[in-house]
Image 1: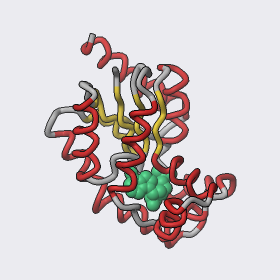
Image 2: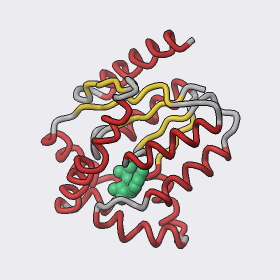
Image 3: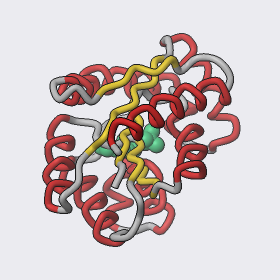
Length: 195
Ligand code: AMP
């Protein structure tokens, strides 16, 4: 299995690049944000619990997202690998993911960390709000909160994986195609090393 984490702040392009990466490499896309939005849309108890936190730009509890990822891993035994998008967002989630993958005798191959300056992030989120219909994109206060939560809780995840020499910094500015080709180059090099 070849497992990738696409890492970076809200608005860095993880969703857009994930779509291209799964199409190209045949990986199973696991986005905790998408899974949570589906729970909200279906009006499940989990969705209702998540909604009030997402609306404030806060994180959903680790047990909730780890549980969702655990079920998704079980439900997809035969895929060539997973692309994790928006997960892990805390060091506790990263440790839990490592344990889950360990049980499956696999691991994270690379963490691709998209680098985008803060002004560009905010402007991308404002643009996205016009089409995404996401309440957490539309409100500047929530956006600021999400960037703050990213810095406090999620950036340490990159430090955690850097200790295992798994982090690759990718320039996340430029056209969608330019960014994709940088990601592709990094993955193909890793794949060469991995095989
Ligand atoms: P995203 O679509 O990845 O930007 O996620 C939207 C929102 O869902 C986030 O702002 C969080 O409130 C929640 N969320 C998504 N993934 C996670 C996660 N791994 N841990 C905690 N909360 C999450």
